[in-house]
Length: 186
Image (cartoon, rainbow, N blue to C red; front, top):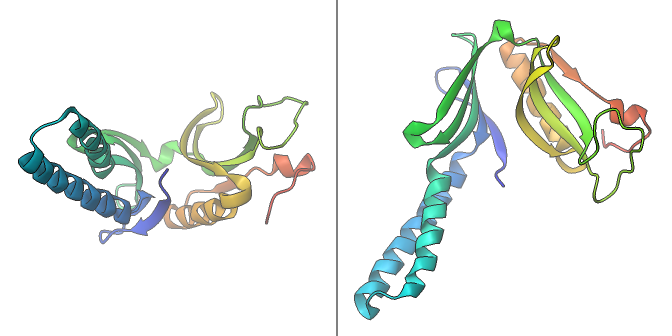
């Protein structure tokens, strides 16, 4: 839906989330729909068909105020997940000390881990997930982003390298799909 970008803020924090351009474009379209709806209501009066532009306007405003980003702050030594709408967004703070590593994990969509019946194809695409491994004993992980490995896997690995370089956390890339003989662009 959104292209996630990695950008550095003025205070040295690294932010991984949708770009500002998505919010600006959504806000402009929402404003155009609001102006068009009010001018149409002023000329024609209210009609039930105005519900459709209202729904689109609400969806665009949801995009404007939706937060789905990770903030890596080296001064505080924390990775903060921000997820939600505007001031009601849930913030989950994870200390760098609680993070074992940043990892890229490859898997096939719709196929359980450890399954020997892997049939890659259009229904079972190879995917790449950027995650934070929190505890190896319990298998606790925090997913940051999941993308198709063929199209966006390399870009995700580059972003993971930049995050690891910025934070000083180790990076592990799982290439188990390659060892099984499946194609991956490197």
